[in-house]
Image 1 (cartoon, helix red, strand yellow):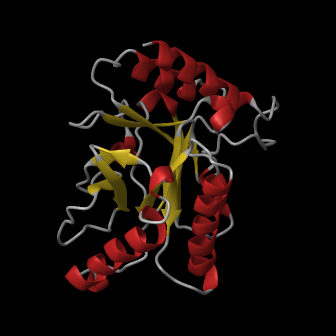
Image 2: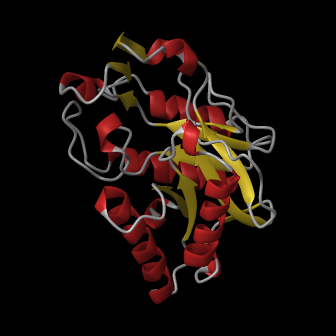
Amino acid sequence: MQSAGLSFAIVSWWGPYARGESGAINNATLHLFQYLKQTNSSFKIAIMADAYLQPSQQNNTAYQSIYDYVYDSFVGPYNQWYFTWDGKPLLLFFNPMYPTYSNSSYTIRTFGNRPNQVDWSFWNAPSQYLTSEAGSGVNASNDIGNPMISTDGEVTIVSRIDSYYNYEFGYQGGYLRFDPSLSQGLYQAQLNYVLSKTSSVKLVIIYSWNEYHERTAIEPHYDYTFNGSPYYLLNLTSQFVSQLDRR
C-alpha cells in the first residue's frame, strides 16, 4: 500500500469478539496496529464496523460498547497510528449499521450503497461499464453513476465489481458485473473523474485492497480473466496517487 503512495487503510471489523471468524478478524486488527507501532510506521488505520449487528440488536448500549472497545483497544494504545478525519479518530459504520446516537470522541460516518441513507457512498460506476446482472437482491440502478463526492469532500472509487462467482457457487442470490475483465477501463475512468474534481475532493478511498470475492482487489495478484501483470491495478493506483499529490 505504501509503495503505491497510500497513507491509510480502513479495516472491515466485525465486532469485539474473541472466537470464530469475527474473533480472528479482531485479533488480526490488533496485530496490524502492533506491527505499525513496532516498525514506527507512518501508515495509519481506521476502523469500519461492518454489519455484524442485526437491526434488533442496534441500540444505545450496543453502540456505546463499540465506541468503548474501539477506543480502549485501538485508538488509545495506538493513537499515533489511528487515522483522523475532521480532527478526530474516524469510525465508520457500514450499512445497515446506523448508530442510534453519536460520540464526541470520534468523527463518525455511515458508509454504504444506495438506496441506504449514508454519509459516504461506497461506490458507483457509469452504466457503460455494466456487462450483466442477474438473480435476487441486486439492482444495478442503485450503483449507476459517477463516484459520489460527499458534502465533506470524501469520494470512493472502485477498480471493478464482479460478484458473479459468489453467485455461481451459491454464496449469494444475485450478482453484478462492471468491467469484469478490466478491458473497459472503468478504473482509469474513475481515477480521471476524481482528478477532474480535485477542487471539491479532500479524501479518496479506494475499494478495495483485498476484497477478492467481489474481485475489487488491487493487491498484486494473478487474475482469472485478465492476462496481464499481477501489478497492473497497483501500478495504476500509484500513477493516480502521484498525479493527485501534484494537485
